[in-house]
Length: 488
Image 1 (cartoon, rainbow, N blue to C red):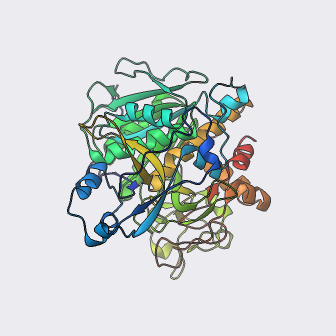
Image 2: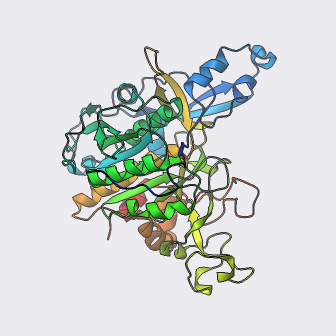
Image 3: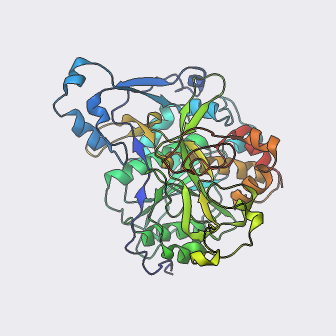
């Protein structure tokens, strides 16, 4: 049966991936982690010099093809002189796990206890929503996994003949499936066309979802195009496939049409995660939905020892929706630019005179949380471009980099909750805002509160103590956060 998700007006609205790449090919990572030791967690991250010619490239939606094209151009005088213009840092999965206190990867040869399996997302599914096709997603994932000592993923087929919902994921094993979403919003047999930007986004989503929850099942849903209507079909298909975390690393300019898509986020057994955008202060759909966890971005500094330091990334999204009213759970924090909730009665979003002159309406604020997003403090990415025999390495960033990692974090939480006999998280924001944020000790343990940096010049564009628009509640201290999420 056809899936009906089309909202009038949304057919013409286009979603865009929200990644950035540092403007150079990165030196291949060492094979220190290849045997599954995660040894790179104990050393400083890779650094690399960039010259002025490379820095002339805008990192937003930068593709491997554009980087190669720039490299073939005539070198500038500064590039010829060898004088570096900037330094970038690139992190391995083990270093990111250490920085954000994710569960340590056990040695590859060790049998896993049930608790260790859960800490790696066993038995859970992450649905990645993307558009167009990356024909090398599986082979690049295999390279990424081998180099960084992650469990290999077995490719499994999901076709038009597959019965929905999907069966339960294989325990203690990673499987990877690519689903071509047809014009009826169902699994099809025709691969979408290739698009270099979306192929890059797909590679980031696949590799970093796996790096965060290495034993989770990954299902990549590729829409035939990037209209909101087509992306919404893919989202609804994911919920029909069964419980899991739905990861959405893209954004579209919000409009009144968005309210007609709210039904696709209503599942109680799925959690939804989306990026806030990479153009500085501002918001985008689907992160503005009250039922979606909105992920902003930071610039990370971590030496491999001690604690990490972060500031708000200058290009992260963040702001107030123009169409979505403030959800109940956000009344537990003070949102910059809005009146304190207890002082005013709640009203639905409406004309300005609903409040009277001088009073801001209570609207949905994003971000909710954040993660590393600066491509100059980026994370390794393996990418094979069409016609090339092997992948090259890049430094990935953008708010879309944090989305599959937060999806992986929620998948781990659901695995641990299942082990404790608890239901899936569903709307994780309720626990984050209502249970954790108001309790000073819990909040300080579960999050790094980002208090510096800005994504614009407005008064509310600056990170500060507690909740702020660029970084939300902050970045996860996963050890404490997972413990608090595994309690009802």
